[in-house]
Image (cartoon, rainbow, N blue to C red; front, side, top):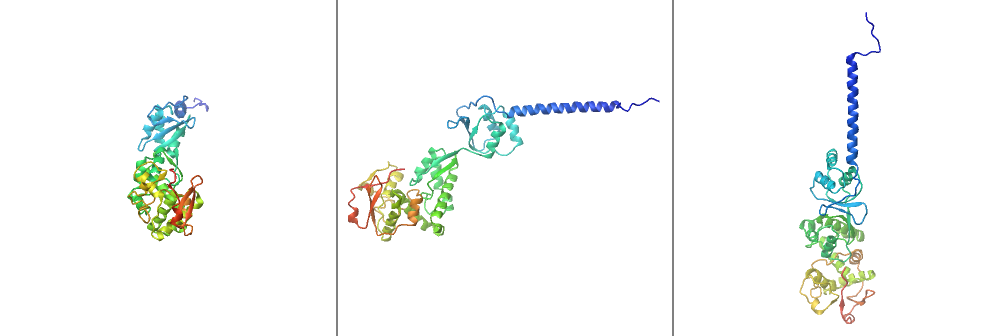
Length: 366
């Protein structure tokens, strides 16, 4: 009988272990190769980006080491990858396509500020989060709807004509219970931050929401007023905004206008005539009003038509809104500018005192 050595494995078993060792080695080699490819593909390019004009990618002049990147509505992740590759922000779009398949969250349209060098996973995460470049627009108190539209357009937030259209949209007016034809007077003047090319309707809603938040802070019971009652106050506020120059006179001016309404006397506001000249007739802002100006035949001319104009004439801020909600009590029916430098007015009860003014000034254009 032959002896069987306990340390010797059968041939078949030895062959199995040899094959298994080979497979493991091959898998390890492939895994290392794949990891190397992934690391290479994910790593940022060694050279600085070189975006082509009109590609939607540009070097940021305000912040070194960043690019501005625009993604259009409906653009695919693969299209984004091609543009990133061409601009030299990523090494290869193929790794980008793989990344987009592994993480299927949608890339969000908008404007982005991307730092470089950055890995593809970092860029992909930024575009998924939608952390867009926010553009700043300061809407001063007393500007009109048209001027606000111009400011937003200059900032690159939305087209002026789109903003005007949204502020005149019947559905939005109904949503906020605005009795007029536009949201003139109902958009709060403030500094806003919006992404580039932001939908105009969203801009309008943001400004309108801010407006109603502010008037609730100024006068909590404003929410209980009917749209018509509130509209009268907003019209007064919009006129006061364009008339006052020093804050402590705003409530006195509001009181004068309410006093005139009470006795059915024409408001005779220079600001309403200026609104006709600039926003309705499209002429340059006047420094002085003459008789020919205050005789213009228009519903907004409060010199020749008693009562309130058809709608607000500006976007009033906190001071004017507070004045309209809380007018100062007095027996004044007139006021006139006596110190243009200091912005001070003389308030009077009689026409004799008022007509001493040689000319009528209007508040400067914002």
